[in-house]
Image (tube, rainbow, N blue to C red; front, top):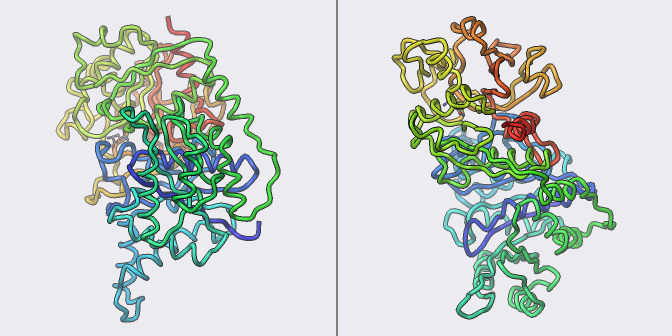
Length: 534
Ligand code: GLN
């Protein structure tokens, strides 16, 4: 392809319409046609990145190989397209302003008045084009966070206006809106869509394609009505009907011809060839499970749908691999006590203890792990979940009274989990954890090595605390072995119990690397253990 094509995805009417899923689905279809695609998310908030935002504000923080703390939509992009993202794929208003202000302080603007237009919009443009400039990608799909009409997203919409003008047919704007069903009237309503397109037009942007999120199918009359009022061809009105699984959305978009519309608008010739066999196979297995398994997910954000997004998705990928239906029971760690744990875990075939920060709910997690260890229930601990397994083992098996992580109790006599040496001097919280991909060597003969079928792996991290080596010999002697070690600095990255059907804790976040095409081996093995758990 001669030049990179830029596709912008904006949203109207309301938030949570699924711009991320639509963007990821479009990417999936274009990749399946043999194009190289990357997706970028522009977030209008002033935080530099979502790393300092708590899950109540922003759901899960997704981590890339290069150590960027990013929006959870990047997780969808990777899971759908199987293409890794990076720091450049998520840009916030905070980062844009930070860059502009640094340039101003350096004197780069040579005495100019620094303004939203052109300085902020130029910086946004630079970040968008950076992904395309290396000629690596045929398509750069840029999702604009927020809803059209928000004060915060104005500079981004203005940038889209400028780029449309500059790029001509190398640029396509896809606008996602809502077509609500009013039960009292018994009708789908197009007015909110008309108004949101008008709002986009007020900023000088005419969308090329309108994707309509809806509960019920759009008929031809409605498609024509939207086309007429919004200045697009009826074929550019794409229905996005609610789906049972997000993984069906690429198929629905293919049926509606979203990818073909994009190819037509960017004047790219295309054939009928599109290879989606792998996704079709995934969906077939998802819809035709041969068994069912109940898994407990123990965490402190169970009321939030998005807090453990990647873990949920990785569990789904793994259950599909095992052709088994998974039912995830979310258990609030703050509500767990020694007296009710058996009741809470009744019927559960395995337990996963979630990552996290801070003291809240920690004792409940430890109690759940003790139950899993003693009752030989498959256990998977991720990051804080692994640290809790270490604390539980030291208190109840090694009899180290009051053992803890210094994150929760800085004065503990037995700091079995302690702050990393190079973290001690850090006072700024943003972007300073141990972040991104690190190598890990697996112990020969261990469960971890058998599961990965490799000697060295690479996994993504996001933490400040680690296993305290001082206690290592004691752990080994008593049956908890370090089966994964960082080859450069010796940090313990995986622990497992010898005398247990499946008890593994990992300091990293394997969930970030699980995709539809490559379900993560640890999750696949965990679900397998759950299926065979009596
Ligand atoms: N709070 C722990 C740490 O910082 C674990 C972090 C996590 O679970 N991501 O080390």
